[in-house]
Image (cartoon, rainbow, N blue to C red; front, side, top):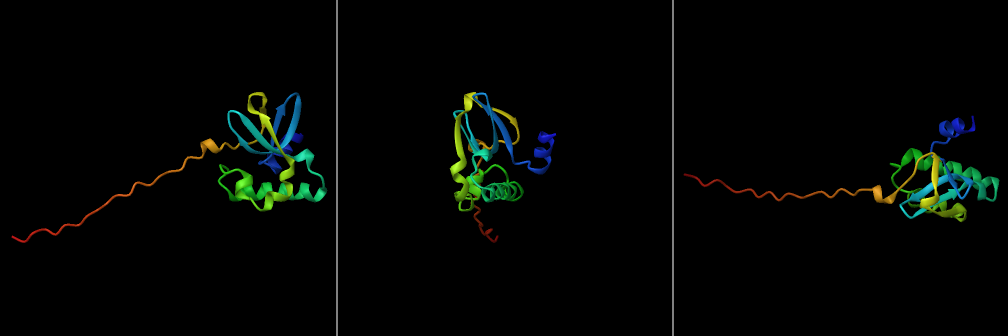
Length: 123
C-alpha cells in the first residue's frame, strides 16, 4: 500500500537498497560507478521535509527529468543538500522510482548549412 501511495503521490521518489538497508529519496545521478541520492530520512526538520517534497514536485513537473534536481533547482536545493548520500553503484539496487544519468543527456548539435545565391547570367 505504501509503495502504491509513493508511485501515485510522489512519482519523483526512488527507493534503493544498499548494504542491506533501504533508502528513500530522489536520485541525483547514477552512473556505472557512483549513485548519489538525496536521502529523505536524514532530513533534520519538518520544514526541510516539506521543502524536499515541494522541490521534488517542481523538478518532476517542470523539467525534462534528464537534468538532475541539484542542477535544475541549484539555489533552492542548497538548504537540503546536506542529506546527499553517495553509494557504490555496483551494490545499489533501485527498487522503485526514476533514475537520472547525466551520461544519457545527449546534446544535439545543429549543422549549419551555407547557402550562396548566385545570379543567373543573362543570355
